[in-house]
Length: 134
Length: 134
Length: 134
Length: 134
Image (tube, rainbow over all chains, first blue to last red; front, top):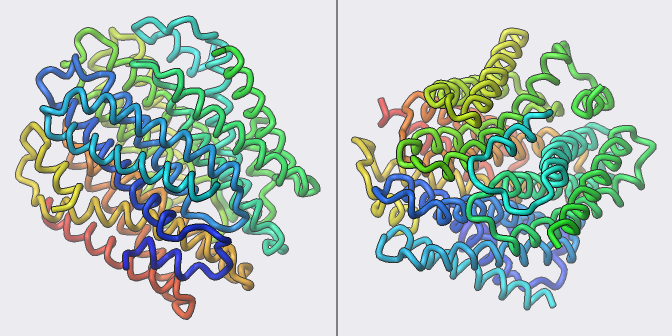
């Protein structure tokens, strides 16, 4: 059991009918994706052809910020607001999809290939949780 | 002219057909709202009846995080992604609306009254920009 | 009176012996500097000679993140921890100094000139508050 | 090998003489600690005796924000600034120490016990990296 799951398990009040595994997975993906996107933006900055990567860098930066806001929102359960959770998951899924699409165009750079794979995982986790929330 | 408007004016490439004043206003409101919500959450923590304010604190924390992610996304113009911008504005508007609704229930506490007024301004700025983006 | 000052004034418990004006100024500068640095990083990305600006972009990104963490920490007064406040102000002052130094080297670009001026203001506000905290 | 280590390995330029394992460990702890502190603040909000936990909540919130700013700064290597890295590691170590001390006082609540253990791990990772940086 990971720390994210420990923190869910030890929450002292009712978590409602949420699918705990999908919630835990989505929280983990949001934080992991934020780190990968931050690192990928920086790796792009160090490439010789940085001028061709400016859209990738910008998309990485947005994705990192949005994943963190989503991961923090999902880590809170007190006074749960289903509509706000859904709106953030929609925005996060879109950020991951945009970042995935741009990074995949540069997948010969291994940092973009790794980042695209993580964005794909985070996108799936957001969609799975959205579906589970109904 | 404020610094936000200076930074927009000195952006070296084309900003597209965006309504600059609505964009500047929305950026300013997002950062101001994030600060007010952070402070309101903390002020609630120091109230004697904090136990009755836990939903307000949680909603403040979400709103602060989401406003900052939105304000940072709106401050970037390179490789602009209209769909992502709209999704974040929708999420931010919803966060502001939730926070406004909760804070208004406690408007006898002046920090909640001030925070509700700022959330209302930020909500309006998000909606105005959404409408301007079409 | 600005919203930052309103939120300080309506804090329901004792603020201790802090210099309120210096605290309010520092909070405002931290949020303004975070926005300016986010925008300057993005403006650098759109310059033709972006390859010569990668250190500036990276320093802008660090400064934005650190200013926001500092501005949020300073917006909280409950359970005040003087040593943590000082450590964050030291880190924020250093981030602003690094960003100011890099942006000043590119002050023919107006976004870097504006950003350098804001970093200088935020640096001064951090140092003034550090001095006031003793 | 984890994603954090993959992103370090695929960075296209020289990482300097940094101890890669200590750097990777510290990045991972910063993101994990930010999540745990965000969740612990929220768990405290749902405790019946929340009024006795307000300092814990505030310290959790600061620690989460500072850990994220540190984790993002450490994820960037382009234009490395040793003094800024050290200042952020010092601030992060202090935030973790404060949070650990407060959470340990409430270790009969399992979320505080888990959070204290994570803060201790992150504190150690910050100190180990500081020592390795010299």
